[in-house]
Image (cartoon, rainbow, N blue to C red):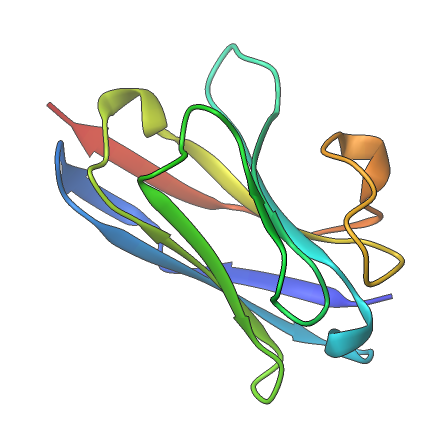
Amino acid sequence: QLQLVESGGGSVESGGSLRLSCATSGGTFSNHAMAWFRQAPGKEREFVAAINWSGTRTYYGDSVKGRFTISRDNSKNTMYLEMNSLKSEDRAVYYCVSAESGIVMGKTDQDFWSWGQGTQVTVSS
């Protein structure tokens, strides 16, 4: 099971950009599909984006389509989330997650088995 460590969170003004990273260890990164979820205060956890083992297939939540880009570098055992045109509603703790297989089977919590500690993203208007 992969160990996951997020970084890159912080505070940014509305319309700005941030790049989150998820460094992994303890397993074979390229065997696993990966994803980002987020949770805002008082709200349910929300699917953000997912990527298959090779990076050839990506999936996005409706609220971030066209603004966020998920990617991975299997040579560096790292996944990324490029976030552009940030809005106040993007404010949340962002979690890096890994799936048991290399294929994205779904977009719910139950489809992923390993979670990072999260990184805070704050967007000020």
